[in-house]
Image (cartoon, one colour):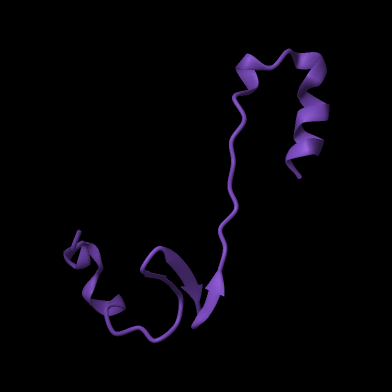
Length: 57
């Protein structure tokens, strides 16, 4: 999928930053792993919120 038209022209020649190279990310030319997650607080009983937030850290 070519999405280069979505990149603003002032960023197209940028040498550093977060890039996608194949199925990997690089940041400033070095491999970069993005770790992310989510919690649906409305599905967790309020008494467990603190426990779940600490586990997410």
